[in-house]
Image 1 (cartoon, rainbow, N blue to C red):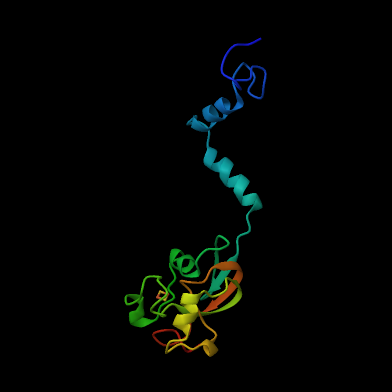
Image 2 (cartoon, rainbow, N blue to C red; image 1 turned 45 degrees about the vertical axis):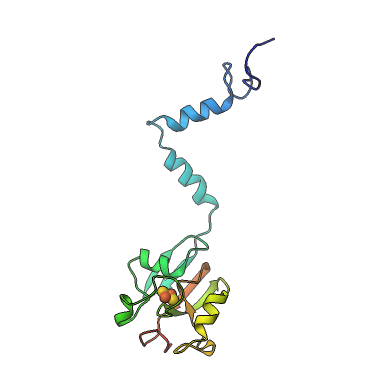
Length: 152
Ligand code: FES
């Protein structure tokens, strides 16, 4: 009979009288072990990465990523002219980030629908606010003319 803390498990997963998590802690804290590669490999094997096509570029992103953020991270802009500086920074109120999307994206929410009812936009224009749109699969994106990108 072994005296000690319950679950310390001599002869269990860890062997040598140590519970398995102490080995895990040691392994992940060892500076010689590159755990980032370990995690990255295990994650990339199972993760689907949609592609966004915009202005001749192909950008891979996380599923569910916000379209505006994906394009900005890739150094691309969804704004025309002065709206590059004069925009709501992704709050869904200015409407200048409007783009035409062709592919799998999230459904528009209340805020986005409300903004797209307000001129110069109109639901018949078939555009989406890139700051309110999440990428769910491969998507082709087109920016229209005009400060709001309303002329697709
Ligand atoms: S950035 Fe203003 S609505 Fe998208």
